[in-house]
Length: 511
Ligand SMILES: Cc1cc2nc3c(=O)[nH]c(=O)nc-3n(C[C@H](O)[C@H](O)[C@H](O)COP(=O)(O)OP(=O)(O)OC[C@H]3O[C@@H](n4cnc5c(N)ncnc54)[C@H](O)[C@@H]3O)c2cc1C
Image (cartoon, rainbow, N blue to C red; front, side, top):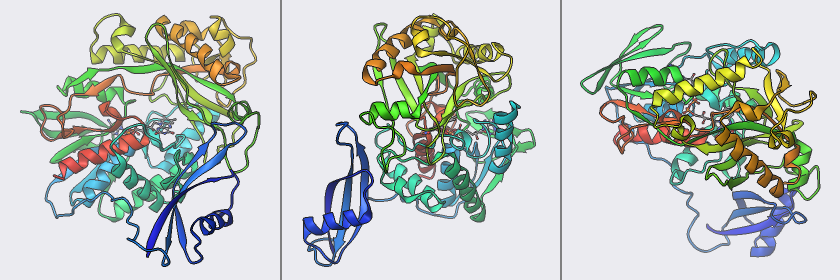
């Protein structure tokens, strides 16, 4: 049975019949099956927006070799005596644990938050009543920061295609829509993620894994370059190998690791605000004046510019039809992020609007990892103290560029309220000056961008710290410790964090 590949241009609201006819006409085939290899929206010409779809058509009438799908990750199994403790159940922690379990290790996941069902109750309480839970919030709890997120599965990291395919296919087995395997911009939404995370946990447990929820690792014993034990609030734990996938919100864990001699250095990261627009405004700007496009959920954008000061300004983690949420990891701190549901049909669309900056430039001197964490803590606290609750300071983009407050009436998807503030003055001037330039530039690129509302502090697009690691991912100077995922500063986002966890797990398993 041979195969042929074909790229066709399809209307946004095409049906499978349309595809069958296109393949029949192109190859003169009657008896065939097809699968989609890649699907992306081509919106370059606003009067001709269409899907570009790559197909593989297979038929007995076609000569040649059979279609061989791209290779999957090979995880050789052998029965091993060693145990592994993985700290954190986010994408990096879970996928590293999953791979190590498949490789034959005995694996325990330690998670400071609760199972997704309990975590959902705590998040609803935050959204409805402003009551913050230290263990269960947008950063902590089962599935990590990835669970109550937008669930975009894009990644800018190169050379992770096998790991990426593995993660996507495991998500599909756990209930994700199959389209994530071929969409250029795959998206799950919080509703799918909650279900997927619970299904992944069930299969991990059925295969003999252990998960200790509501268990906070508070200390680590390291002797002669070797981890000899972990201290948790429920008691001590020992394991032959330790993988720490704590995400980049767990400042307490970072501080503890550095006190114990685990090496980190500072690196460039980004801070700024979230910007939100009516979804229809973004749709109109991206779709040639149309508010709806049959077959497409909501319009996306990604904008970048380089400012006079040299700081890059860019939008990040865009959530079409999503909500802005309070994603602080600790009480009496305030930072924002964005999430969405699979349908992406909320009233608004939001994105981070941030400037890339090095910690040394922010603090005005060469700073240590601890200093930048202290500085970030103080900034998150300042945003909270402005209102002494989880309502957030905000201003219209047009007022931000004029360095002034807006009038009182500011509406948004953020459930805990906005109040008008001179947001420009709340972050360091090198950043706000760059953002002003960026906003002006973006308004020229996306009509109506200046109609947006800037809100809160966005400081978690990437980590200001990076672990000192050996080539195989091992923590420098500590032979059985791996800092993985976002916590390592080498990954950011669901896919790249999961891929980093997988790579370190593969290295540990000797593959
Ligand atoms: C609201 C929101 C929306 C997002 N949307 C997207 C998106 O659409 N697409 C995307 O790619 N990325 C998105 N992100 C970022 C993405 O979620 C993270 O990059 C990713 O989850 C990082 O994975 P990780 O496993 O390294 O860490 P995390 O997911 O942060 O997981 C860390 C886990 O470790 C646990 N933990 C921490 N310290 C300890 C300790 N001492 N003891 C025990 N447990 C501990 C935490 O409770 C947490 O569960 C979003 C983030 C947020 C907050």
